Length: 194
Ligand code: AMP
Image 1 (cartoon, helix red, strand yellow):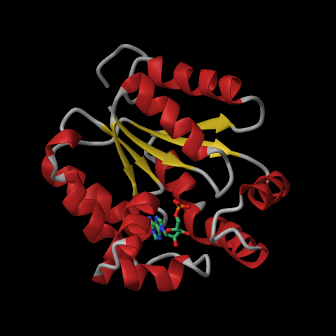
Image 2: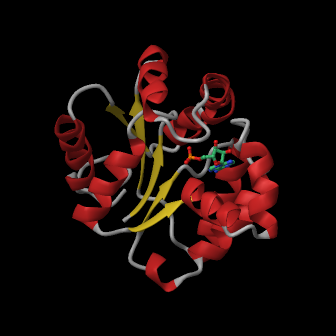
């Protein structure tokens, strides 16, 4: 299964992604993890990305698209993957569509994990990651609302979007995700071939 997982910072996407990986075994493609690894390894891309990451800004599209294009070519993606944190802009989504159309491997579903902004502030303030200062938290939520949330409409129009209510216990939320992922795949949601 080829899945895109979208959600604002602090929505619990990382926790749910782990549970999806454990149960459905797709390759886990987290651009945040890849960029942090590149930054820690002090590669050229990592040092460039760090300038944006540390202030809560998005890394430029061409950098992230290049990273994902390379990663999608790896063998472990053949059986399916979970794109976690990518795409984050319409330009990235369009680039992804192009890559997948060329490869003949369209997405199966786009999951949105939905959590109100007030709850995000509370959760992120408790998380304590290096880029979780009050200023960057604010910035990342604003960036999500301005640049990433348009993707919901983009994928909604393609009939791929499934919204998951992100309030509740980890298990409750995962049960909602399972319900979507266990449902028959396909455009209209029934078992026909349209
Ligand atoms: P995350 O772990 O997904 O919250 O990502 C951490 C940071 O990495 C973000 O705040 C961005 O600076 C950067 N990043 C991750 N994925 C992307 C992406 N698809 N496009 C641009 N920047 C990204």
